[in-house]
Image (cartoon, rainbow, N blue to C red; front, side, top):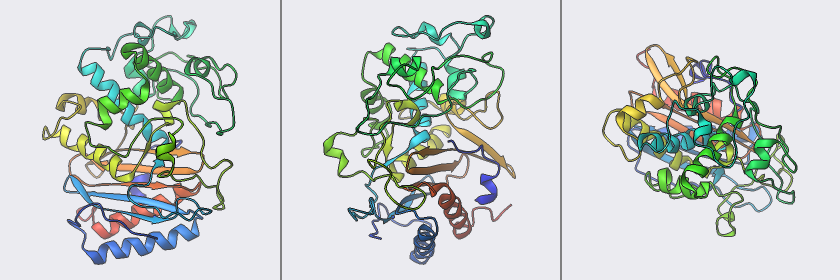
Length: 376
């Protein structure tokens, strides 16, 4: 899988064991081999906790949790432990936006300002000939600024969404503006997804976590997932803390992300695997709980960039196509990848800042054990 990762866009962006399903294609020896590898690699990369879910034959083959949610509380990671999905929030939010397109509540190719009421993208010389569309936003081709967000410590003042869009205090990011003609080239913009978040708020007149719960999460049985920022007290006990590069907890342990569509999803590896499986099945017309087969195909079709579709990174190698996304929040690193045609994939969530190096090694090990490239 390391070879596969070389073809994927750069990412910005568990020892109590719990099984969440039967072990379909991997026997116990295979799982033990992967588990031992993960436990040893976690030590090398100073990552206290990992959650993994492996997809095979369009279903979750197995899932496990390793290590600790917090090195101070020593709570064990289980398959129900919540991690910050970071930028994997984007494809899940993109699915909701595409559902509204499918239901004709918002248009994919119209000026996004037509759907915005509380705030508008300011026009300038870059928008004279072309306007920013939802399709531009989902594919990072809108010419919008602000690649990512740092989050806010629990004790810090939190901006509302309009303050974030305008870069006003207490926002810790710049104003989100167009500084390149829309539709000309790919440039990653978490700022664009924040514009989309405001558009969905204006279209529905509902809080964003409720939009996501009603539109996607409940439909896909993602029962341990939420866009609530901050997490309510009732869920904090299930949440992992973030850890730095040396394995120590980050300050105040969890950063808060009002930029929910871009970075605010709390979830589990198994729930993200369910999301990936639904895309796989929707593409084949076998399950269309949120998107039709046609819309799922559009979601996974590259637009302008050959490596990015609508909310999903796309890569092809040896005639095989994969979709996925990575995520990087303070103290959390995660990755999701799944094959479009073969019904395989893996989701890895970590609570350490070196988790991106760890999940690359885990991906390679899973690929080796499952022999996914046997015919290459």
